Image (cartoon, rainbow, N blue to C red; front, side, top):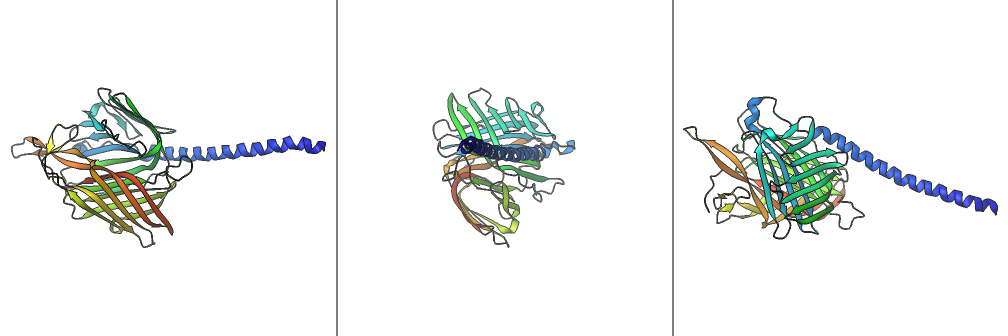
Amino acid sequence: MKIKEILKPVIFVLFSLLAVSGVALGACQNNSQNNSLIGELSTVDVFHPPTDSSMMPLYNEWHYFNVIDEEQNLSIICTFKLNGVFNSSSVLLGYDTGDENSNASFGSYPIGIAEYSSQTPNVTIANSTVRLTPEGYSVHVESDDGSTVFDALFKPEVEPSPEFNASGFSTVPGEVINWIVASSKMKVNGELSVNGKKYILKNERGYHDHNWGYWSWGDDLGWDWGQVTQTKNGLNGNDVGKYSINFGNITDAGYTQSLRSVLNIWKNREIAATFNDKEIQIMHSNFIYVNEPVPMPYLGAYMPAGSFPLPLNTDILVSSDSGDRLNIEFTTTSEHSTPLPVSVPTIDENGNVTLKYRVIWEMIGTYHVNGEIDGKPVSYVADGFMEYVTGDSVSPVSQ
């Protein structure tokens, strides 16, 4: 009896130690995975300033982040952009809060004030910064007047995509678009403050990619891009979703042919399937032709009526010889679509430079995803983002 009484606390201690060890081991594994992601991102997500000064007029590069929170009806995008043709750096923060605070802030500055290099993903433009820390990307965006501030930590949950490259949209030697999805699925914690009102983010779904290369927005160039992550509804704990999808498609300006396209689907931490070029079909429909001049956010100008139609519906079909397939439907509304202007400098016969503009439609909508990957069904509905660029540059008009 005494032996049993002595053994009871010993056994209890042993089981306690095993339980604690299991928790510690799980934490160590998670930390190890996160550290490996951070280490990889510190290499693949760096900036690419031109080594040849003659290419500077065609240089474009930016970090892009987004976050979506259905419970608060909140979505946010931000970009940190470098532009060689205007020798400018800029920071854009767009946000839809579902109330009167929905808006965008934009700051443009000389490129010389920006701090960036080929050694790091970090960038500073005026009072706004991106820092890759051991925990993830620390993103701080602050409007010039301080009325709008976004502070958040984007923690990567999945491996980055392979680098995507596209050319053939210009006759100018050396023109190329490069793109990497640094993390298609991220946990985001932080806050957005607009005129003193705070919106708190807690383990929300985020995304980050990086574009760079040499091109002009006046080239024979268009594109599609989209991204959606499965929601955490019905899942355990703080899991932001098992599946995430991202696609990119470079087209001609008239959207008559695809020059290069890719769609990746991640399952948990890794890419489960990749589709390329002819394996991908993208079809836009239900276009809105705006019958009045379209105001451009932060530009103080208008685009001519009907110049850049907006597709409210998009269907994406992908299939491979291995049997992987997806049917993706995206639906948006004009209220959840914002026309972002991009400048196209033109030179007349007298050498005078004038600015025309194209539009990137930034859309938020609902994705319906159905299909089969690696012999297993995939089916979910979630809100996500899409971009659409097509059409020739136009001159702004008065209202």
